[in-house]
Length: 252
Image: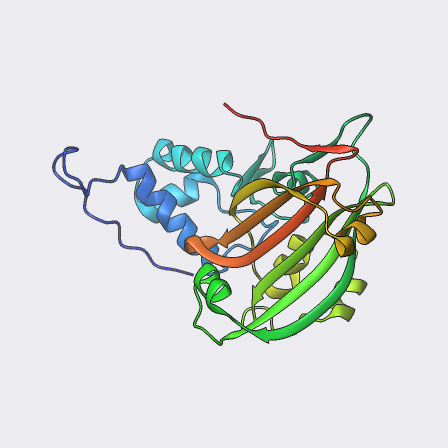
């Protein structure tokens, strides 16, 4: 178990280095999550126990947990306690995939791996993933289907050292989401992502995979996903067919 020494607070809130006490507690809880003290899906100690551990009030701990729950890092369950959020929870799937059908209910998704190979990081991959030029990376290509229809073609770049052991066979054998696989087998939890979206036309190879006409409009979604400590662990380029789906994001 990690031992923490509570940082001394600044004497004035006007100091540029001032951090509210609950934010300091939040930082300590994040350190414990990053160190694997509490695994995805496991319950964390009660507010009373955490308050005693950090020598603060329960209200301070509660405020830290509330903020982490709002950020989908923790999950409160009425009458059961607070748990580490997990990609194994079906509700987590659409947190990182904002694609919904234009009509009807959301269809069951299926990941169809196409390729998985090892390479050396070029300049763009090295810069994006925060690794050195020439470091080992793993590249995955897959199609994501909804209701049996191909909707997304992904090309995914991963740090080779973190995801050593990832193969096409592993991808094909796993039945859950890709992020659930990363979490359960490699101990990597995605906690946030940044995306850039633009419109493109389908090239011939992509059109064949998505069963659409060449030059059909697609959304190009480039994503960088981060784990604890703001560490980039995935660079993804996705091409989304919008024939029957749209990208949905709730603001406010």
